[in-house]
Image (tube, rainbow, N blue to C red):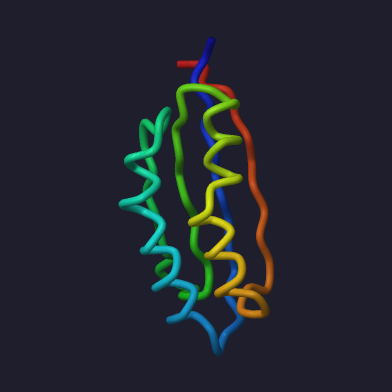
Length: 96
């Protein structure tokens, strides 16, 4: 089975950029230790500090789904409730 690549896109409310960034950074060490996580990198747009993007690679969609239901992601959602303007994901199949 081909690995799964995810791009997770987050736009913070202008007054919540620091909060969202801090909470996103907390996810990195925990997620990188999860079963199936091959890569989990956070990026911040150089021209728009409110825009963040995770670039992730997972061994399988099933293991990524386990991650999506993990307690640390639920805690992130609770802590940043009202601080995020927009959030979207792209699931991609690795070709080459």
